[in-house]
Image 1 (cartoon, rainbow, N blue to C red):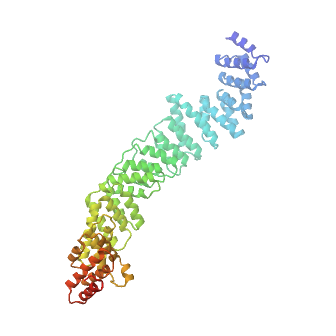
Image 2 (image 1 turned 60 degrees about the horizontal axis):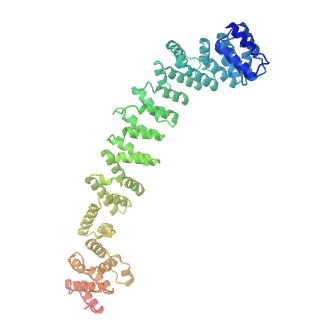
Image 3 (image 1 turned 90 degrees about the vertical axis):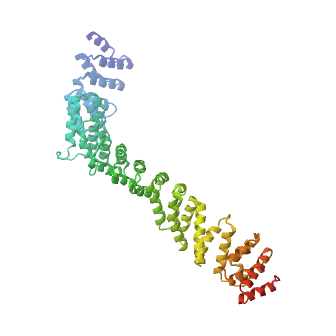
Length: 541
């Protein structure tokens, strides 16, 4: 090996090509050629003019642990520049002397160089450098701490069980804020948490649980939550409350890891109130997770929480909550209550449209209270009746027609023709509405009409317009049906006959029959005499 080293050293002369000289330095490091001559030569080459050669020499010196080169390495670290990082790594490998020299240098160099030193100490792998690196964790420079942490975490897989325990002992001591005279800076506290998680020491779990709530800074809390993922299979009641608190945070760095832990847990009755609180979380992912966890639980509390999501700005969340509500009995009750208790027409429309797509699946008994409420609103002139009637029509249009007709006839029989008209007008909007309903509509209007015989007043009277339209479709049943309406007074019939007598076409024939009916029912009354007079004057006698 001595002969080989001697021959290799000859190739380091300045007259040799740069590539050859660099290759020789590399080979010396790989073969472990370390003697006085090699050490001296490499130390001298640290002053060579060629940067590429100097960089390779620094690497080899670190690999061969040539202590005489330490002063020059420290000088290069202190100077900074391209060689500083490699020089720091080489110095850190020189044992206790190199570690001490770098520690002394930490407080006299620029922040960028301090990062090199921290990373070098962490990656050296010597006992002295490990202790020094752990000390760097309390540095006030965030970049220095981050460099040290990254290097330390990279070494953990190669540590023995004894080394991991020793590291954990030291880091747990740093983490104990009660025994520490000076509290850790946030960056140092976060670094401690990350290292504890990477070391996978069970003793770290209680420390991590204690770090996930204020007053710990967000970066520390986030790191602790991420680390707890491996130790949170069965959190106790207090730990659960802490997780729910973090999941409800506006900061996604805290909400996301808490959400990941909670997502693995099952829901029980004791924890249900805490799960329901997630429906108020500012983050959409948390609300969606709560919906997935609780959306199939058929309970009033869950239904109420889902109902609140219908006011959210996110359409996907609203649709998902609505779909769950429709499948739950408690959900349908909550939707119905919200529909019937809405304080404005706009809110009622919102709740009606929300249920329109699946209202046909509701049981028949659901429609009874809704129709009663719609009737109440309709009779009070409240615009909230329209969305309720819309929803009932979507559920079962035939049933709604029957209910409206029954309610109209009931009010007409009570001689409340104005209220009956409210229902009959709704029925009259249907183009397929039959003669019976249209005649009821016109007749009820006739009962409450002012019966002003002036031409302008009659032209503006809707009940007369409706009768005129019916005469155009008369197949002989109109007068027959009118005759059966015993609740129409002679005055009503005279007003109708008077108007129709002045209309063209079929209307005159109906007018003749109606006026004769008046004369027949009240031959000696004033109306009967007026009907006979109108028949003569209109040429219908």
